[in-house]
Amino acid sequence: MIASKTISASILAEKVKEGDKEAFEELYNSYSKALYGIVCQIVRSEEAGQDVLQEVFVKIWKNIHTYNEEKGSLFTWMLNIARHSAIDALRKIKKEDYREIRLDSGGVSISHIHTTQFNVHHIGVKKLTEGLVAEQKEMVDYIYFNGYTQQEVSDKLGIPLGTVKTRTRSAVRALRKLFAE
View 1 (cartoon, rainbow, N blue to C red):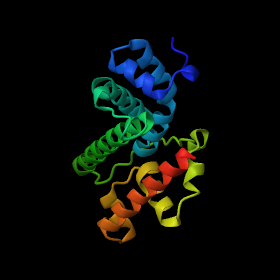
View 2 (cartoon, one colour; view 1 turned 45 degrees about the vertical axis):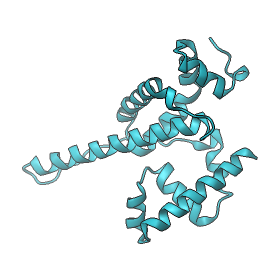
View 3 (cartoon, one colour; view 1 turned 90 degrees about the vertical axis):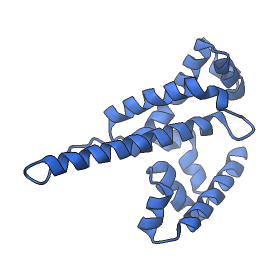
């Protein structure tokens, strides 16, 4: 097995691009807990979270050749795959729940959803968001930690979609600077 402390993320990504299964296992061991926590926060179900995480790592394996370290860190690239996959799964779950409610003769169906709270403190992300301006922190909380789309944030807060996009972009830029420090 590859020693994670002695290998950088970019070298790990290159080895995975070459089809190195040990490197992929190391990638999984290094990042799966963080990605699983984020996925579970979005889908709000451990079972669905496990399914999505498996799908995420299949996508990572199949699409690692598209990763470009000049555009961002390996974790950010994987985080985006995980986030998008979780949002897609959540939409599917909501659509299925809607059908279930409409087909139920009683008119209402209650589903028991077990939530898992991901502790982002262990990777330092939550602490870094404290250094953001309030409106940037709000965007990060809604979009990245709670899985809202930009349109949903716009609707919920009653602000224009362009404003949400601008605040989100500025938050990401500010976080990049904070990560670099």
